[in-house]
Length: 233
View 1 (cartoon, rainbow, N blue to C red):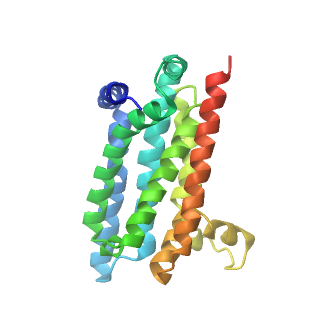
View 2 (cartoon, one colour):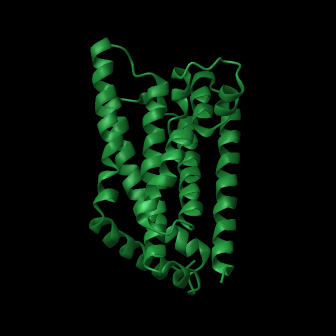
């Protein structure tokens, strides 16, 4: 791992961020939703439901973390510089860490502001923090893996929307009228965010294991994609 290479990648990505209005606008979306949900909570004079808090968390990680990583990778593809970067002396970890620093900064700022607005003290415990940590890396690796194959920045939306609906908005499946014992609900319940909601209610550590498995699967997926793109002629 080379600190100078990581710093060079990070500085380049920050310049790209400042030029891309879409990347700058995306972190504002969770904040706007947090404001809307907090106003609803004030109107009913009730504590913010854990499900709503995790919906905002899911939107933050899917839209900001995964979306930003996909856009950064797609931009490299569009400029025909991604393969050159991968064939440079920079290692897989150099590239991932360097490219994820700007994304991490945007994600942390957006998430902290959103949680402060909602007053989500339910996440201020060791279990929740570990869960958020694993969840962040799941969405990060997912964005890296998919972003390696996205050819242009404009196409990222076509990939991002399914990710947001499947992994970001998962808790909202309760509003779609499916029976509690249906296959769709059972599958949805093993996805990362429903697992963390279950952890918040039960205080069990088993959901952490499930989210850890999801994160590991995403990491393996991104590494396989990296090796494939790097070796393709």
